[in-house]
Amino acid sequence: IFVLNPEEGLIKLSTLGLQSKYNPGKIKTIQMIGGDGISKFTQNAEALLLYVPSQRPNKQAVVFKTVFE
Image (cartoon, rainbow, N blue to C red; front, side, top):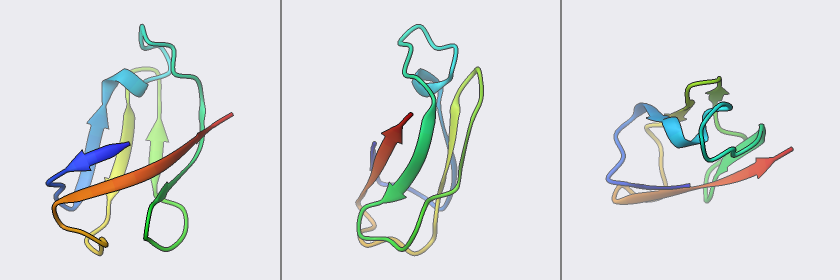
């Protein structure tokens, strides 16, 4: 997942909701590239809610490695 000009806090991605017409599947883990550990997220029927931390390797863009089950 590429996020341009992110601010700290939650972002909502409706295309990655469990009942999205794109059928993305259930997400197992998300990790910010260049960050420490697993990123906080919640995936429900409507959307993926992903937390962008204040400490990021780059303020202009962030990449999250997403692993599906």
